[in-house]
Picture 1 (cartoon, rainbow, N blue to C red):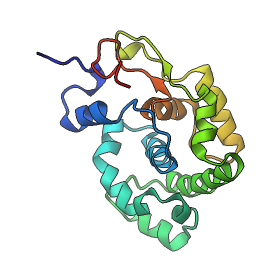
Picture 2: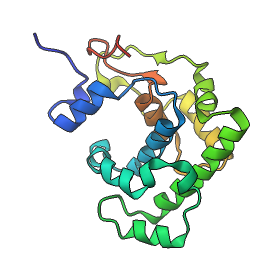
Picture 3: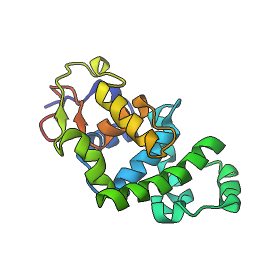
Picture 4: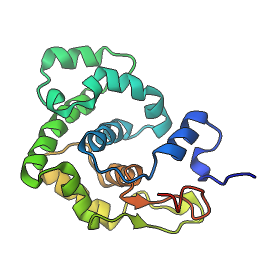
Length: 187
């Protein structure tokens, strides 16, 4: 029996594994939410597959996405990251990651956790969309516009509405699996 999957992931084992195991699964723990925030930041303007292929390199380069450590990075660490061919060597995105780690910690202080903050935008319940074809899913929504503006107000960088919507999809805040995808009802 053939299992139906969202069309965007077909044809690449890494993409399919990500789709089958992670994409759209509700994430409520701060370390994983931060990891996805970092990866989505670097993905801006690039393909998600490019980021997935470099994910382990990012994990190693950015100290396993430990935001408390990243928040303290200084110029020598930035210089090291800019020389690391295993990641995307974009100075603005690297600096944004440090700034975002600092802002992330401030949100935790205010709300008790980043998860409480971000999931509050969907009233702690995933939005379940009903797309037959993944190409019908939007790149952004009024909700991602609102969240993007709030993140920017709190000092986050590289968090435009499209990046934020991709983060919402990845972390299960919205379920944009195709309705006949085997993951649609599972997540």
